[in-house]
Length: 242
Ligand SMILES: Nc1nc2c(ncn2[C@@H]2O[C@H](COP(=O)(O)OP(=O)(O)O)[C@@H](O)[C@H]2O)c(=O)[nH]1
Ligand SMILES: [Mg+2]
Image 1: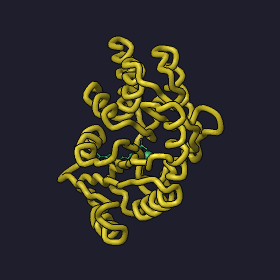
Image 2 (image 1 turned 45 degrees about the horizontal axis):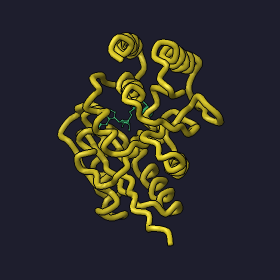
Image 3 (image 1 turned 120 degrees about the vertical axis):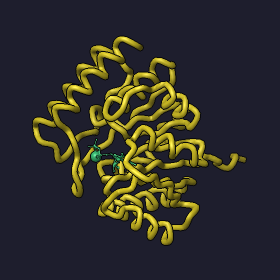
């Protein structure tokens, strides 16, 4: 007789001005987990969004229930890295899924992440836009070039053992995510890259699932000269320290 599957997946969903996107991403998440019959909770970490994201989140909590939608807001915008730390503290699952709330990351891939994790008991499963059937939609040439270039350069310098370094759609064993976050010093794009580079440094096993990434429809994304300079600095830092 097979033992019942005791795994629980805590989705960390950091939000900043995602009022338009939140109902749809939550609906898709609930649908995905319900259909695949995995136990889950969705932890929404809203950083005082001026657009009223938290009010929408409260409505969703009423609709889906407090055991499924867990609200852990903060007063003001304190950044993604600390949002994850804050979320993990409240997570009751033994696995953590990190994704964006802007519909760039489709919940339909989550059952594939879980299946991949179970194949070889991977410590980390990383969604990749740069292998197999993965891809990017809605980016202009400049942004594609920067993203590809950044990945390529990093592959050469760091040999990280993963094909998508700047993506942020991933599944982790909870204690491993905690250790990685403690070890990471950078922020923003570099933070996602550092997480996977450190995973490799600590000899954690990394599985990959091809994902299609769709650029946000509602709201604004940021990618400018500052990000590129920050990325270059982060890359050099990781090159020197890992
Ligand atoms: N809680 C919190 N969420 C944030 C913050 N900055 C961005 N987010 C959320 O993090 C995710 C990724 O942000 P996004 O702007 O889409 O980044 P990009 O896709 O890299 O341009 C989205 O779900 C945002 O709403 C922040 O300071 N605090
Ligand atoms: Mg985004």
